[in-house]
Image 1 (cartoon, one colour):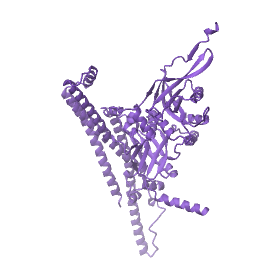
Image 2 (cartoon, chains in turn purple, green; image 1 turned 90 degrees about the vertical axis):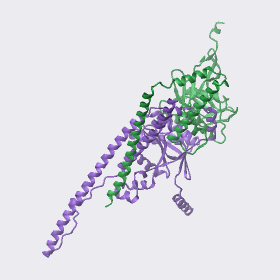
Image 3 (spheres, helix red, strand yellow; image 1 turned 180 degrees about the horizontal axis):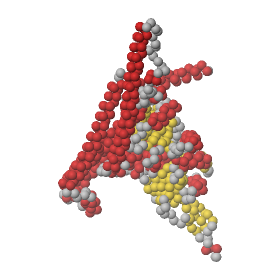
Image 4 (spheres, one colour; image 1 turned 45 degrees about the vertical axis):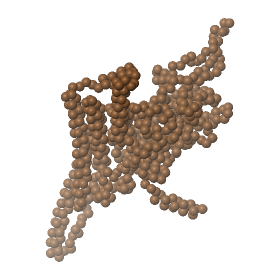
Length: 337
Length: 285
């Protein structure tokens, strides 16, 4: 019995190895509405919640979710939060909701989500669940009629590096990992049960204009753009700080190498003199000398994340500017008519 | 005869000015619970959460299902479950309180009075929402009721469910876009520009419709309707009157602002990819 058990575990382990990669996240409309409700009610505070669902082949189905209370920096409350989570999952199981954590969702402000905390949370989840996903919702963009919903995961190669906590230039080059490769965006599919579909069709006849259209044709995007640029500038400052750090490191490194060379030459000259005098040469390395102590290389993780942020802001600016162009030309055309 | 003065047959509360608003999330939630109901269960029931505004409008914003057992003449509700779930929900959003309960099915059924009595102890004057998930009369019937008790003097005779007006708040769902909530499967979320395109197409179609209507009125094919005419006049008048040079300046300023931003973001991106290449190149010993 034990033998077969062991083998079946082995088999399971073997099948896990060849599991197909995650391709699509399939979300129920219910989950989208729940996320939007939670994130919007607490905006601009940032909130999180848990996603429940099923892992089917290369598709991750998200069929339900529940919000987390706003976290406070207090151990007692933290334990309370864990209890809350267990209690909620137990309760939901009783009404036949899929009782399997597949990730979490969080709200963000203008897409400023690429932080070390996100990566840490992700690693925590990843330890327990083989496949998990993070859904990011940006309430500030919904005012423009955009459903800013994104499903993200960390790339495998990045996770490996993060586990070893090794972000030196050499390692990164070895893995051929650049800042674009940290996060992987997974396409989102939306599904609804036939019942919900019937209800929605019944309750809301085909209206020619929806609120969404009004929002999209809204001409004022300036406040949004301003905030976006502010964030961009802040990020640029951070990036230049990081770069100063690196410059400092390289300057120190080259100075140290110079010192090492000078010391080595001196030692060689000394050894030549000793050889001439018939004495034993001194060793060419001296670990006690402080100039041989390696200078720690600063981690590149921060600059990578900042770079990711910046490119995200740039994308947002491009997107919104593109929309504004169409709106402006539309307005012009209307006015001329 | 003296006693007849107090022994008046009356409803309590006499009349209700209550009305209810239901958010689409609640409907979604109820449908989902119904789909996931246990094998033998005929219907699902649950608690409605929300808030009551001072003018008597009940805002139903959230819900959760409560397991129950039902036989011909009695209903057993899992009260512990109900309280646990309520506590959990209050932790997240303390502002949402119990406002009533829901049940699937068409209209009020026999067991409803018992459950309603239970919820009356939880909250004053609860709302009973019924959602017909079986489409019995061919349409999606959603109704809201409050209970009114008929009393003779001090004595309670009966309870009556009175229907109250219900407003389905679809604004939130509209923001998401019906396109993705109506169908059973959407392959891809619309991106910014695709959404924009759809909106513009709809706008153009509307303008076309107006054109067609006006033309056919002018040609005498359609009887003119003053109301529609006034709406069209209002719409045309809502375009602000700006002199062409001023308008051009306005548009061009805006265009240039956006072009500048676009330029800035593109140059930043170029810089980033350049830095990326240089960074790795500089490290090769």
